[in-house]
Image (cartoon, rainbow, N blue to C red):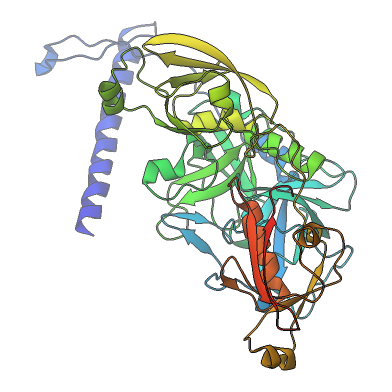
Length: 516
């Protein structure tokens, strides 16, 4: 407390000194000259050994937030999620912390695409609220963008507009990697917030955050852009949260703002508020938003394909530092992304002529001073797109053309993963069967049709006791493991099924989900 007191007093003392200096300059300017653009003081007068020089006087500029607030507040909605209590994940309460950052209402844990049908307006009696967030209307016919962690694992979503009308929402698609989700309500002629260009945003520019903090609807706060291309994990040493190239602002946001709008003074959407820096879970000075350069691409893919078409360079990279540059003899550049190695399998970077030891400094003319900025430029593209990569090799500048591939090393379209693609249903095994077979739990394959399960050789009636060495006791366990695999950024997605048939015959099957 004593230290805090000293800090406050020092700040106050500085403010007083600053005011005194300003008053002196203004007095000199107005009393000695008619030209109010410059004020000076002669050194040595009254013992003053210094002087005041070149103080510009201009009419004060006012910043009016009202137009931007009025044009955007009706385009932001409140999103309430419901789950059945027994479905709540263990260890998650009303909020979830990724220390020292908070994802406001849960973590990016999966990709739930099945939602209750409209127009159910009241939650089922056996459901309870699990979170409250925000969303942004981006089309008059009901498409809304929000955060994946706002809608993740919800069994029902209720959207409330600023005019108090409520609708059930359907999930069109979600992307845990960027923490963006697209949902839709059955409504027409809705107010929208137009998409802006986050790449034209400048550090120091005024922005407004619009959302529903702590359940207080239609709340607007103001701040400036503190930084661009910010990597949360890279800046704090914490675990990275997917693709990170955030807009950092000092606009106050709190739990409930997740999925809300970050707009410029024209009322254009330039980001989706996602996370805050906090030791407590409440606002502590900085907030982070996914820029529209990423949001537009993700939303377009989800709307067109139901899944994000992820393009990758296929390289292992790190920020160029002074020590690294000295160690590698790099003298012609001080910022960029250093290429360490290539990923296994096909690599679009290697096939495009990039070599280990290169420093990537720009993509399509946009500087890539760090990994976050490089990620932002790559994620804007789809597999099959060609990009111009500017790099430094042997202290000389070079440009190569790279055709981007997907994580599987192809340019094929990735379809939305759907649990029904397995081609079967699952049911819990009754107690008498478990006792007869001498097993403690499992789920039985029923209604087997054409699909990945039958293609793997599994036959009707097979009782699955474990998947990837994890015990399963209910159909929900199987679905949870499936979604966890499908959201993982890996080349191989394999489900190893172990179990037994009712006859007592043991079985072991491998399901390759890459083709999903």
